[in-house]
Length: 63
Image 1 (cartoon, one colour):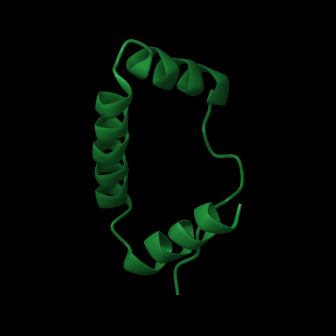
Image 2 (spheres, rainbow, N blue to C red):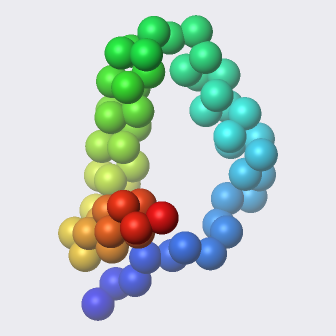
């Protein structure tokens, strides 16, 4: 069974967060929502493991 890694794992989390904010800051709410949906699908594809994805869905819902 694969396990979801919830430990900090981004080398520069503040830098990533800044990039994320800059990417969506001038988008309409609808465009930002669509962007977030596409990004989620791209990242889910990168993970590729259905059990890890299910764990991530539960973790995001429960937090």
